[in-house]
Image 1 (cartoon, each protein chain N blue to C red):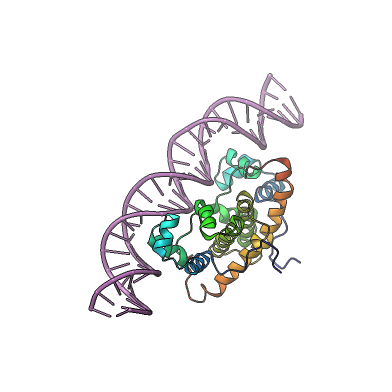
Image 2: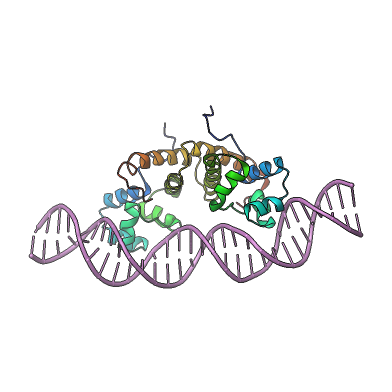
Length: 116
Length: 116
DNA sequence: TTTGACTTGACCTGTTTTTAGCAAATGTAA
DNA sequence: TTACATTTGCTAAAAACAGGTCAAGTCAAA
């Protein structure tokens, strides 16, 4: 089912961070120092009441020694899921999104209209 | 394939608005007046260089006489697709998002932890 | 009970992103 | 040319977001 490089099923981005941090036996404070965020923020991020900053994805991937692509996908999958939930999208929203994404891939890209 | 109430395949939210506006034979200015946005913004929205404001989805649904759910799904599907494209998510991101969304549905909701 | 790790609330601030108005420019059809 | 529709550059204002501080908690293990 999983293709190479594809992301394994994961609960949420916060849980992902927590799991990886604990694997490395870092406290929230240690991890926070490495990535440049204070302890309370780390706690909130892991528990889902604060978002991880998009601009720190690169640092996170090198800190965890993982592919940026994998981190990115996980990050956005979580972002989209939360948003869909928050704004009461129907279950089909991601299927529609995939169609729309294909539309953008097929038209915009070829025309060089990358300005989204 | 399409369930009742499900959104028909659509190119982009901008094109959707343009199509529906033209069906009703409204100029961008007329439409803008009805929804409360000026002409330039309508133009940019239809052409995809500006986002339609989330806070106006309700007005849009009544203006077009369509279900809010349908409009909402279309709006967010487009939003997600653009974002995924912009930040170079892999093609599997929406599949992952769907898993994550299920995770949130099964845990957060039951616990009343609706604060996303 | 002391200590370290973690959680949470309230509040504040700087930054980035996005919106949308105006005016000018560009179609476009009669 | 005239008239109307649409598009676009510039810009101020608004909204969203990230992260910080500080203080007050909980919790588990030594």
